[in-house]
Length: 321
Image 1: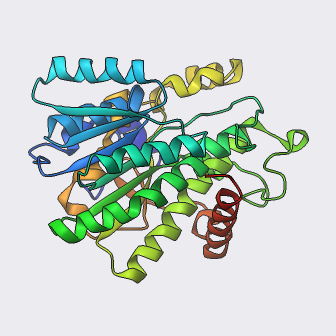
Image 2 (image 1 turned 90 degrees about the vertical axis):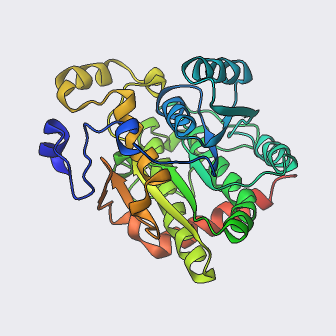
C-alpha cells in the first residue's frame, strides 16, 4: 500500500485500506458455522479479532497463557454481545509441553476447527531461554506456533473435508521481518547470548512466521487440501507488545504518529483474511492493510523455508513429549 496509503487510509484493490476496521472488513459476513482458535486473544489485536469474529457468529476459542485474563476477556465480550460463543483454554507458546496439552484439551472437545489465527507474540525481549532451552522470541513467536499448527492441521483437514468449508490459517508476521540477521535465520546462533540482538531476534522470528506460512501453504496445495495459509503485517499498533521497548521507540512513535493505527484498524487485516469470501482459494500470500503486498527476498526463499521447516521439526523431535 505504501506510505501514502498508510497515511491517507485510501483503499486498495480489496476495497479496504489502513483506515478500515475489523468490523468494516467483516460487515454482513455470517460466521455462525465456523470455529476459530485465536492465540493471544486477551488483549490488543487478538482480543479485537476474538470480539469481531464472535460478533459475526463464530465460536471462538481464546488460547491464552493467563487464564484469568482470558476469563476477563470472555466476560468483556459477552457484556458487549451476550450471544457470542467464546471459550478459552490455557496455552503457553514458549513451552512445547503446554502446546501439546492445549491441543489435547481442544481435540477432546470434539468440535470442528475452521480457522486458526496465530496471533500471540513477544517483542524486543532481553535474552532468555525457555524451559525447552530456546531463545524466548524464537520459541514463542515461531516454534510454539509451528508445533501448534502441525498438531491441529489434521483436525482442520477433516473439518474442511467433512463440511466442504475452506479452512484458513492466519500467521501474524510483521514488516519487522525485513530487519533480521544477515543470513535471515541464524540457525547456528539462535541461542547464543553473545550474538543476540533483541530487535534482530524479533525480526528473525517474524521472518520465520512468513517462511512457515509459505512452506505450509505449498505442502497443503500439493496435498490438494482445502486450507489456505497467509501472513499478515497488522501495521504499527500500540499494544502491550511494546512493553520491552525503550526510549528510542517512544521517540520513533512520537515522530511517526501519523502512521500508527488504533486496535480496531490493527485487527482488520487478520479478520479480513480469516473471514472474507473474496479470499477463497488465496494462499501463500503476505497482506498489509487488507491487500496483498511483497515481502522481503528472504521471505520468498523456498530453500530457506524448507531449511527452517526441517530445523523446527528436528528441534521439536529432540524434546521429550
